[in-house]
Length: 129
Image (cartoon, rainbow, N blue to C red; front, side, top):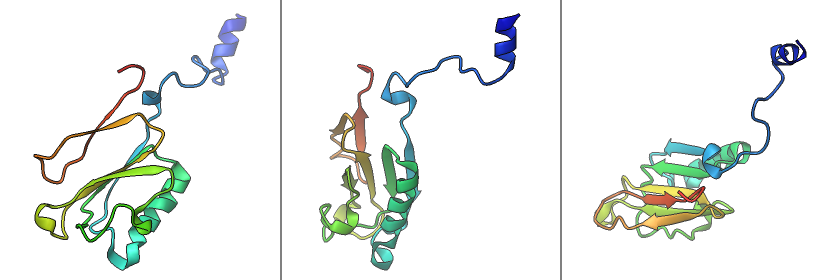
C-alpha cells in the first residue's frame, strides 16, 4: 500500500541520477542565416545570445555566404569555447556555404569531405560508440 501511495504522488523519478553518456543530452541548433556577415555580423550576435540561454553542444548554420576573404579566426565569427568548421560555396562565391560550431570539449573528429561541395561531416564518439 505504501509503495502505491508513493507512485501515485507523481513526484517520484523512476531513474534518478545524472545521465550516463553524452548522447542522452546532446543539444543541437540549426539556423539558415542567409548571410552571416550581413549587417555587421548581427546574426552571429543573435546566435551567441540564443546560445547563452540554451548552451547548445552543436550549432549548425546553412547559407553562410562566406568566402576566402573571411578568415575562420575572424573575431566576429568566433564563439567562445566553440570550434568552427566550415565549407564555403565552391569557386569562392559569396552564397551558399555551411558551418558547424561545436563545444571544444566534445570528442569530435572532422571527416574528409573534399569531394563534396558545401558539406561538413563530423564524427562524435560517446560511450565507446
